[in-house]
Length: 146
Image (cartoon, rainbow, N blue to C red; front, side):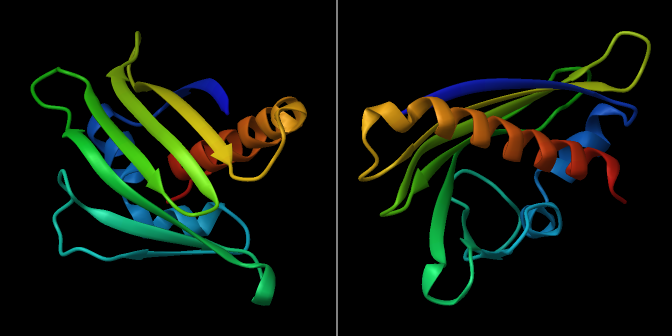
């Protein structure tokens, strides 16, 4: 099990950063070899389920996630979202907050606790480094791409 925290500052206002981070299919645009399918009807709310399918051919796997906490930003309050990973290979949770940033824009705090079934404990450090790098690139891409 690996827990990490990312913090990013975006030039976008809180509502726009929130929209970018919660546009689930857009995550496939910034995570290589990944396709995202939302399995529940819009709008996103507690109970929304989506699946990220990553990999190629027989090496692909599904990473189903469910929104278990959903509080969009409103009237100056930060937005918060929590997801639980319900997969057979990847488990854990992710949560993020979108706050107003000093001087304009927004500040994103992303926390993730990820585990890959079957991996021994000594792989936690390399898993943590690669997960932090991958999710950091994904958050950066989501906040900067149109």
